[in-house]
Length: 113
Length: 114
Image 1 (cartoon, rainbow over the protein chains, first blue to last red):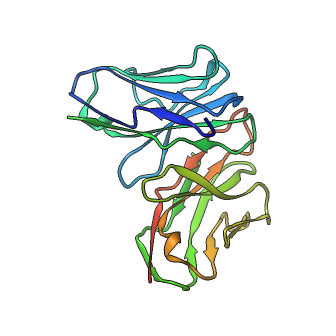
Image 2: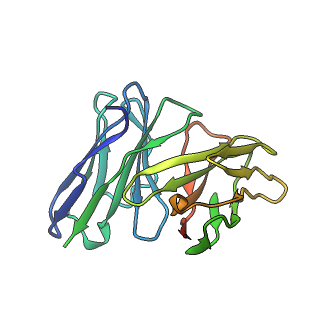
């Protein structure tokens, strides 16, 4: 596709369950980011990949959050033992590389009930 | 640490009014500065950017000038339209370091009424 694609667009899950959110970046983009946006707030950085490796995961809030990008393209954000406070929009973005503009997907809305 | 502060909203203007949304930042080195826009029901889109001091970014009638002396990047538009109603985010990316972590402000909601 032409843009960053995220699935699912909406996810409702019960507290304590495991969730996976998928991001398909723009073709050829080597850099990939995950951000989290809570209601009324700006996007908050979670993790950055350059290729297959996580170059910076300093924004992951705790060890329940994990992300992978095994082949340097699609990425999956994994959340274990979800809590109500994890409810937010999870944004994925990609970029051609260092110093270039980053492009965002429309986000995955996660609601933990 | 690095941060971005922007004026709180919501901002309500009549069509054709002049718009200013203030943004200031704290950062080491020479960051790149951005304004992103989020229209209702859509994802974040880059509106404009500036990569060095005194640069002016512009797009769709919006402008912002990188002012290093005041660490500011205020967004302006001379005549707003109803279609400009959206949430606007100021952001910066460090000028040093090996990656591109972008830090966002909390957003300013703009509502333009006919």
